[in-house]
Length: 129
Ligand SMILES: [Zn+2]
Image 1 (cartoon, rainbow, N blue to C red):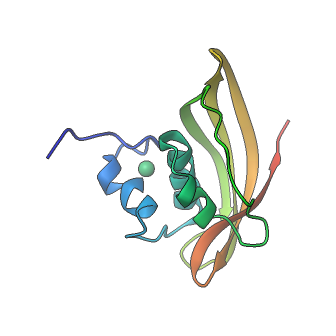
Image 2: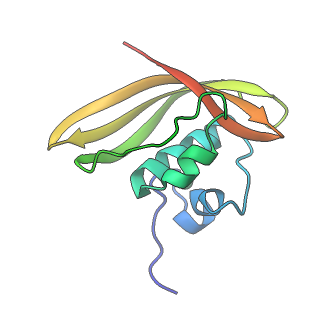
């Protein structure tokens, strides 16, 4: 069946064995970092539905518009706090690399994740200088 596609989150796994099943709702992200990576992958593949589903209901935007001129290159996880299988909150600091209209730039954010009904969701984030 088709070619094996590397997962955009760059964990070194094929998409179908990494973020694919999480985006499809077949598998829950066990940690906040896994959820963060899956949300990055959703930005890469343009899965708006998953981005909204994995957003906390209190902070979720009504709709999302992705900039078609923005190309995501890769994500670096800078650090994590809590967010493990036995935690109910955690933070992930990351730097996402992209190009916008051909110019390279980065987004550096400290994101907060919490569990809702057992599932990790993105609560909010603050940009890091
Ligand atoms: Zn992945």
